[in-house]
Amino acid sequence: MCQVEEEYHEQLERVDPPSASKKCVKCKEELAAVVIRAGDAYCRNCFRESFIHKFRAMLGKTRVIFPGEKVLLAVSGGPSSCSMLSQVQEGVSQNAHKKLRFVPGIVYIDEGGALGQPNEMRQKTTSELCDMFRSTGFPFCILPLEQVLDLPGSVLTPSPPSDQPGSAYKAAVDVFLQGGGGSGDGKAEEQECVSPPAVQESHTRLLQQLIGSAQTLTAKQDLLNTLRQHLLVHTARTRGYSKLMLGDSCTRLAVKLITSISLGRGAQLAQDTGFSDCRYGDVTVVRPMREYSAKEIAFYNHMFKVPSVVIPNLDTKTPDKASIQRLTQSFVTTLQADFPSTVSTIYRTGEKLQTAGRSSSTAERCVLCVCGLDTAAEEASALQATLISEQLSQSSVPVKPEPPSTVGQCCSSESPCRGSGGASDCCRSSRDHEATELTSLLCYSCRRTVRDMTSVTHLPQYVQSETQRRQNRSAMKEQISKFLLDDADEND
Image (tube, rainbow, N blue to C red):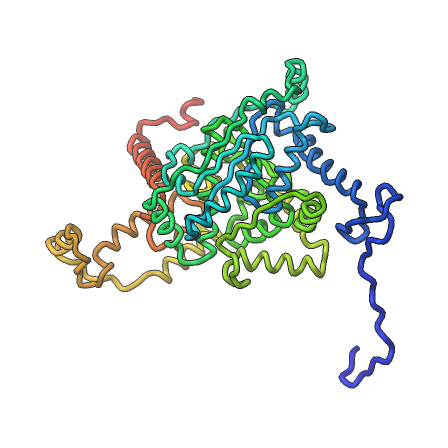
């Protein structure tokens, strides 16, 4: 054992860090130019070939994207999504080996309004991205996040998917090639760009009130991610795209996996971090960059001049303990620096996760994240124990109700509430009732997000209308339940 007065006369042996002066592990001829992991030293050409092959092999072995399908690339301007855009641009070119046979398009969501950025800063960012997108030759559109306030309620309703069996993939490739699909006409016929529309100041204020209603940065980030996902899915549906491609890297998914467990999204991990996400039915979300680490993407972008745009977000310049997402990111990246297999271990563990069961009914899905509800637990479950503890901690001494005339006059007046219980006692019951109705349609994680909001009235109108529609449908079903036949009666 180590002693307090023990002296170390011998000099400690220092292990030399990985050096790029050795040969490439693939070609065994050229000098290594980059070291991705310990023992994985590549020269410039081999690193590029390995990077490209990994992207196309991911799309090829999954067989999720069929030839001729329209795929919408969600580009945020960061290194990972811009690297994904570069891979698609090179993959659909005429001289590409193992050419990608889908029709790509680009979408960028401007979140500057939610962050309170000035219009000059937002216009500068969008102009830089427009120049980048025009160089690709793909059709693109730039949408402000304020448009999420005008979405229809159908975005929260999964549409019937187009069932295409895996055995039909090879037949679809043959039909595509026989029809001359490799000529590239599909890309040329949509050489158009949609400039960012004018944003009304009232919509920006409503969006800022919505994000500001969340009292914690954790809830704000979760709410912002949900709104962005809704707008992306709606854009893909309205423009005829059947696939939505995200640029989530392996490092980002490792952080997201631990974050989701911390936020109570364990039942949705397979959908949140898997390669494909079919929760929306007709629009499938795919993540082809999930095999790349952030370090690998940074090296590739630097060596081959892949442009990217630095865009601030909610957790920019915040301390490590500002939110659960920020703390998890700091923990994983710090641990990765000392133990290089951290991210890959977390990622491989997430690959083994599967969803226990799919929700067959729309009414059984969360009204925010559109995942299956995980709140139908038994009475002796940990979830029920947590809910009972919350109810007991929030219970208070009952207050004597006000006379009907006083309550009616207070609620109908435009002046502030004059109830005896203070500025919020008179109308508290109605707000609590609205929150309770919404909570019954949310999964456990979204319940915690909504609980951190000051008022559910700040939610977009399409969320409130969909909530009301489902409640009306549930009430109607309960009224006519006496006249409905059970499955057992039908079999008899």
